[in-house]
Length: 359
Image (cartoon, rainbow, N blue to C red):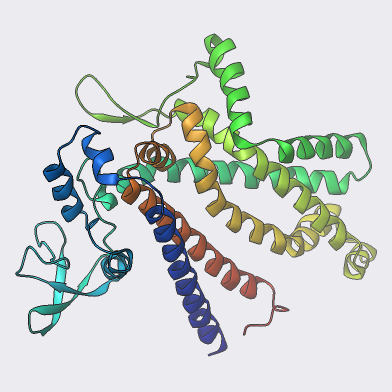
């Protein structure tokens, strides 16, 4: 029962965080001195065309009306007009699937997926546009996190059991260097060395996306284009997980129960990996789960460096073209991932460590 209350409390806190994010990004992108309708049509557009675009995207309404409608669109349970196409809350069944729950005169209460709006530039639904880009970014973030987790834990354990040795010092130098390097800088260096100067041996490309179209018009996966972005994105988390694992292992190895295990004659392998590492993993697991969400935002810069067509590159291009609905949708998606990962981390941490009080 306590764990259920804990989960419900974390879910409610997560909803409040998302509401705060929605308010911030809405205010941010609606106080900019940019005429989105004119940017969409061009500076030579006539007044009638600009007015039509403003009506289509509700830009002719007051900011508080647009904010209310934006929350209504994002809410899974929302109020809409289903008959009057000229109404601001009209829901087009050809564009959005929904289930009608109740009717209040001309207004209906419906259940639907959150609607992020349409792109200023392409008129496509933001959810569809971003949905096409999530897979490459997700693969990039997951692969970089797996690389960082495995390499970081191995190096951290090795540094801890070889404390103050040459290997320990070398690993600390590497991890300190990795922490100090921005992801985009690592990406540029890796692209220059392995994608340009050593390309005849590595056969890696300086730029390229995870997916491509072959001569038959089929979508294929180009795995070699994943290596350099994955390495560039994983440098910082490798360094941080290495230092965190080392510190946690050193703290556990100094505990009394480890000395007792050694005194009982347990093997070195059993002491280090069955007793010490298991108890040292709690802060490492917390760090890994938090980094997975952070890598989604870090991928924005890496995708720009390598022209890796994912969520990050799409967001940057949309921002440069003032396509604000797409940018707002991308920011909301990343915020949602952060909230979900934080809730998952809290629950996992309370399960792994019984000393953590569930409140």
